[in-house]
Amino acid sequence: MDDKTTDLYCKESNRRFYVTFFISVLLLLVSMLFAFSFGAKSLPLETVWNALWKGSQDNIDYQVLQFVRFPRVLAAALVGAAFAVAGALMQGVTRNPLADVGVLGINAGAAFVVALTFVFFPQLPFSALMVLSFLGAACTTMLIFLLGMNSPGGLTPIKLTLAGTVIASMLHSLTSGIAIYFELSQDLAFWYAGGVAGVEWEQLLLIAPILLIVLMFSMLLGKPLSLMAMGEEIATNLGLNTKRIRLLAVLCALLLAGVSVSAVGSIAFVGLVIPHISRKLVGVDYRFVLPMSAVLGAFLLVVADLVARTIDPPKEFAIGVIVAMIGVPFFLFIARREKRRL
Figure 1 (cartoon, rainbow, N blue to C red):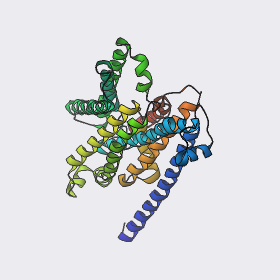
Figure 2: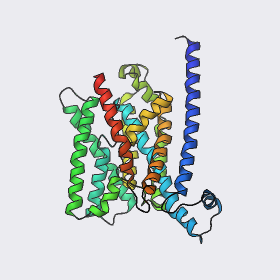
Figure 3: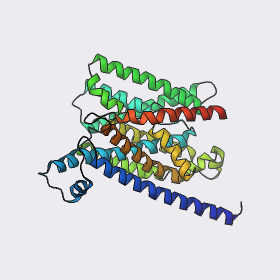
């Protein structure tokens, strides 16, 4: 391929990304407007617009929007972006199409620590809970990688997935046992299945700066991850410190997953499904995959939250259940496709 053909290909890829990204952002904004409007009580879009700019504190509709729907929808968008980018980073680092912070058991580690905190330190502030959730995710990741590396033949994508699945199953069982023994089942059930119903402005203002900073930093890893996707030796020959990039990417994924789990519970499959869809839409270049994953992840969780609270109002389904209905068939499809390639 000559230089002229390469330039045309790059320009076409860039144009494709910008058009797709712009359309996705529009869809996200529209979905958020509908999420503000619909719920146990439907509100006209005009009321939503007025509440955004000039609502009155005395108006009950304004209070519903301002103190319930605005924080939960914004949290859904932010956490959806975080889970999706975390999944994309893990897939890029491990070169494992089945990698995801949920599938690899990282979410389960964070959730297990949160369950222990509910038992032994129920009055702990949310900021401390967030730190402990991250530490739980970090310890689980270390354990999973150690198990994979110490197995015969070393660390492979399939072994990494199997180790994550085993650890996740063990932690899920332990968490359930803790919930039953300490009679926390009612308190933990909805949180453990995942949901943004309980997110308030105080929590959102605490997690938002952290997630936004880590998301922006993650975008800088797009080019190095694309080089690593070409092969370890090629990336090293081009002057890339692959160990440092891998460490930074895993650290970003841990922060995104740990902070998100502490706020909304364990929501799996977002980081599995969304990066695959992003690659189909904008190609395999991680400079495009990461921002596309952020927007599509936000869109998925906003829509999932909207569906969860409009299926049978005023009752609410957990977001994790809605996402799992999409994610489980997708996971099985990807696993079957990868098995054929082996």
